[in-house]
Length: 347
Image 1 (cartoon, rainbow, N blue to C red):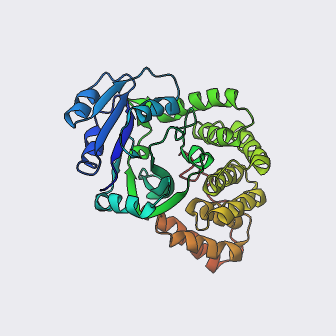
Image 2: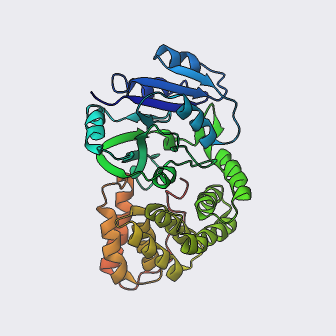
Image 3: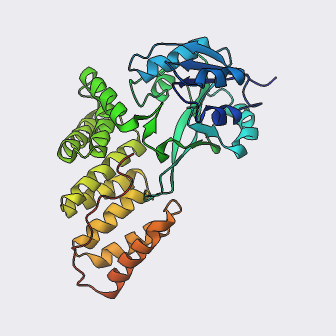
């Protein structure tokens, strides 16, 4: 007999996208548990129409706390976590049960989140591994006021995590900064991360996203200071997974690039690539740092690799082609190229 699966969600004013999310798991999961944190639109009606059990929970500025209300109410053997602006990829729907069978005695399954990005971003999408399927156990509870995660609680409980790269969730939310009835994601996250930093001032897993949010809002000196502090703390605490640490380095590299500190920017881009080989943003930061500092022979292959990257948005192809051409055609090109921020820093 196959294992039972509960979809557990938290929502608020998600009438625009909730039906798409719930439709994507119709016939795939056995139970829908939706925790509403104060919707004033049609969200609750849409959830109930899909067969969901809707729980009402006041919002306490804590994503993990809200998610854990849903976990406590779920009855399935496995939990699937989706947000309203996500959907289970069509090709993944028939594969989910097979992935659970293959998981054996594992406690959690790591799948791929495909983050679709706005048209003005360097990347058309970014794929990121994430634990979104896990066994329904009391020890498995989310942690984190914002950017909440389940991986560490699973590992602390002695659980094993297996990968299912063939399973994919499509995330549409990054195509706009507006969430939950029109509020700004950036402003919301900055406020919550500020509260989290007061609770955990020496936690690099808090300071790293805080620094990125500060960069989004244009507070560049403060962002750079916060991100460098996160790296220094993580050198001792080792709290950031490899991909997360890579992202911090590329943000630092971008900020240093905009300050024309090219050698430092290149070093951080290389540190990012060591932890996340092929990272498109790091390739572009490294290529531009080398180009602007006059190291054209070194810049050319890096920029060419970025140009061939499968995640590159087509609209940025001509820009990279022009940079490569300049590298190949002259060794005296000036570093006085555009210094506009690299797209992708505002995620």
